[in-house]
Image (cartoon, rainbow, N blue to C red):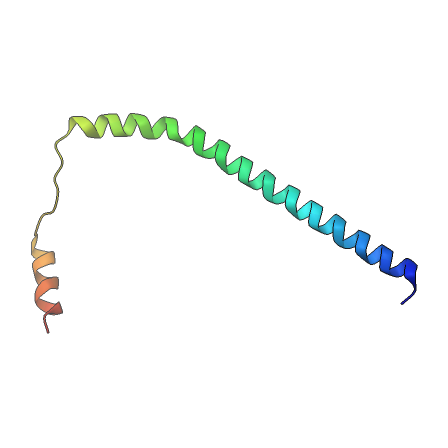
Length: 72
């Protein structure tokens, strides 16, 4: 392989890696921004749920039926 083609291949690899890094950074930044925007609605839902008492674990009929089918 001539020296010029090796240089071209290396430059191509560098460009590919740089664009991949830039794209990954953009996706990560977009994810952080989207999470921050979505967090506003979650705070309201959490405040509404805090007013209601927690139900916790409840052993209902379908849970009892699962327990009986899972016995060994």
